[in-house]
Image 1 (cartoon, rainbow, N blue to C red):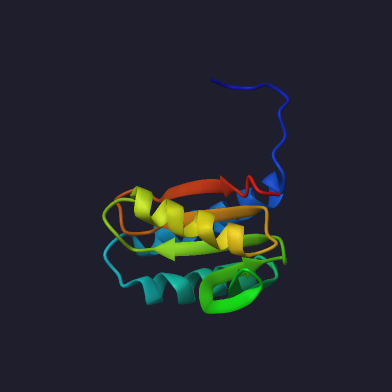
Image 2: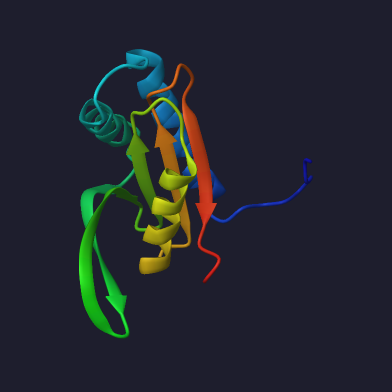
Length: 130
């Protein structure tokens, strides 16, 4: 179903990130390690003058006590978490990983991008707790 006129939070930014990922996938194709795609996406984001942080740490708390410090692949423009994969297909496990990153952080939007399939695969996820 298409909703005409519906605007999503940070849709311009997520569109730019997905476009950068498509450029990387178009040049490299599938079959490389995740680290190759991560480095390539960083280069592409720089070329497109999109601000980002790599391997950004996020703290997870339970009842106000720090229980774990985890690292996500990218934080873009201090607004969007980006997690990249190089697997055959995105599953519920990867989707839940990004949802949990969103829950543990102040971020509202996450992108899960998979470079491992024949065509670039991506999911835009929203933190429903915001």
